[in-house]
Image 1 (cartoon, rainbow, N blue to C red):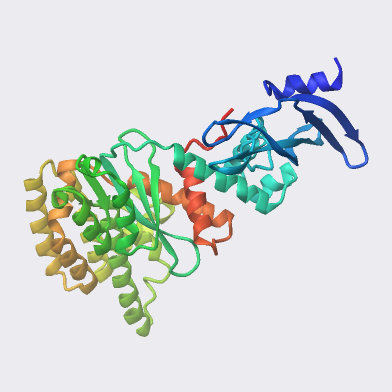
Image 2: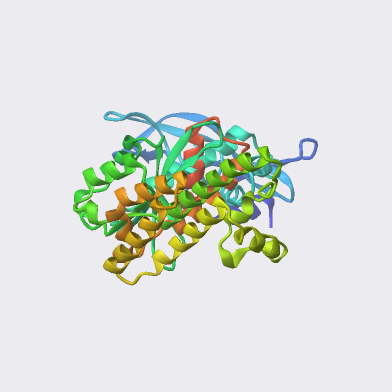
Length: 410
């Protein structure tokens, strides 16, 4: 088999194009595949009106390597002059319009960038960072264009830092029981308009089909959902994970204050115990169990704060809204009488939002799956050493976690 016949087989159906010649350049470790076409009449890419060639333009595309030799396709591509749409370049079957890489090369690049860092993918592929970023940007744009609008009954909303200061994005995820969460939307910042942008793109009939929205107690998210989702007051669920985190933070504040007071008297009992108080009673590592049991048995404010935190975990075992309400009233009474200001502050916050805490027992929805996404997003931030460009951060989230159809068409 001749070289040109081999590459015609490798490239697949490319009619009316054919391989004219194959040139091996050993010094530069490059294989150049030249293509040609004798077709004289083509169609406008927009209106499909048939017309003759206006001119030819030299083009080159990077293709998959041949035995570790960099392989390129070269040819002259015709341009047609359309009375309605002006001069248009004819589409070639092996690459997308204006692309500098073949479809097969972009598929490989996408697979590599999903598995490793962009720099590592560039090193393997022998392309620049800008070229790799261009492939990623086109892949996400392609995926978003192909995405079909469907109702999302259960939604999770959370914020995520790009890793530098207070630069946040709002992440909206689709939550499905028994399935991994997928990112539906990424908005700029964490103000109300960040979530408004998501609801604005959802058709009214789909917003009416929303069953539950899990979020923390951030007012801008609450107000945006109230403004766009019918009967949202009974659909918003304040995520149990965030409530537990608020209580853990309150326990730590009590510990810090008490540790400062004890230290002034030379008592260092609480030194180095920060993370011990963040454990649930059943999760304390064996190496710390004896020491932690001693601390819990002492007359410490931190011990009382920890006990109230642990007691609140039983709230989520309630079977109904009414049972949950009764449990909360008892716990709230104990928290308010605890004389622990950080705990009292959290308890009052819970009470102010109680209606949307109790909705958990109706919808049984949490942001646990979204927290898993957040861990993966944190991995992206770490791999990129933080993002100075928010748009690239948003693109990366959708590229890796948006469940988009990223590949060029075959």
